[in-house]
Length: 67
Image (tube, rainbow, N blue to C red; front, side, top):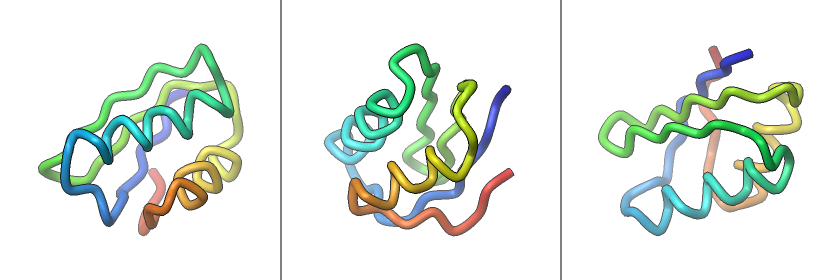
């Protein structure tokens, strides 16, 4: 299932890598697509959205919306 997050605080490729790593620590098979310009992170994962959101938050970024 694909979940989209609106994430604040990402400003560079390091941020993209940090968010991707945080998600993959929850689900190593997750497919992660980050659009840095819009702040959107699309994740295809079997993990619940709350677990993925928590991982992004723990990496130091703020999820402001989940779709």
